[in-house]
Amino acid sequence: MIKSMTGFSKAELTENGIHALIELKCLNGRFLDINCKMPRNIQHREYEVREIIRNSVTRGTLTANITIETNASTGGFALSENAAKNVYGSLNSIRKKLRIKEPVSMDNILHFASQLVVSDNSEDENLIMSIVKKALHEAIRNLDNMQKKEGQQIMKDINNRMRNVSELVEKISKLGLEKIPAERERLRQRIAQLFESDEYDEQRLQTEMVLLADKLDVSEEIVRLNSHFKFFYESVKSPEPSGRKINFLLQEMGREVNTIGNKANDAIISQYVVTVKEELERIREQVQNIE
Image (cartoon, rainbow, N blue to C red; front, side, top):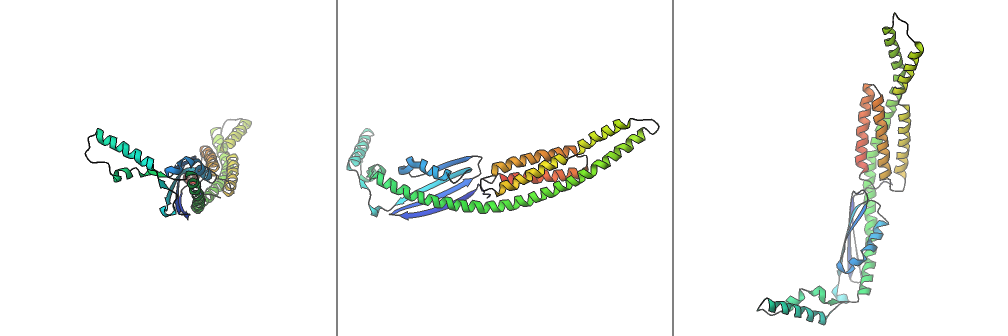
């Protein structure tokens, strides 16, 4: 199954007065790179989020935005009087040093509200993480579905281009086979013209023809190309991520096509080779988008 590396998904879940919003955005990347943006109170458990993502995504630059909102009416927090006194004392000390006339007010203290809240951290943290994980699994499923749909569109284009490449290679193969006898005869005629009145070594001529035929013969390259085509389609149908394998096969196809272009002393074959190289390059651009 071919999947695109790019995609976006979102999932929301509300339980026990806690609302979790998960947003996943994935872009192309050679390896898996995970960036997490989480609330500070659960940031130290980022590794759990990373493990869940790593078990489902293999390549790409993925950003996970996690937002948590709690309903204050559900309880679960209180204000620390000692913390409030410490904040007041620190602000009052600064006021005196800076010779500020205005007294420290409650509004000044509430600017540090995050320092004043106390709660049962272990219970709240585990509950929040439980909800986050449920929402995260849903977001990953949504991302996977989107990437598969986009991957299907990419594969339509790749398959069309690969069919075109296969047809061109078949034409090159036929032209290559037809060209060898013609080149042999052309060489014989040219040599005969050069030595019309003189004797020449027929055995040496045959040897030169064999060498010429070997130089012009592209059957080995065609066989290897067809083998690469076979592995290409097997990789595409594989349930495992195959982007890297396909990219390697395309590089090997490009080498064989270049060899054919260097061997073939024919204008039509050269045109076909140029077209094949263009199609392979477009396929490679598309493959950069798949996982």
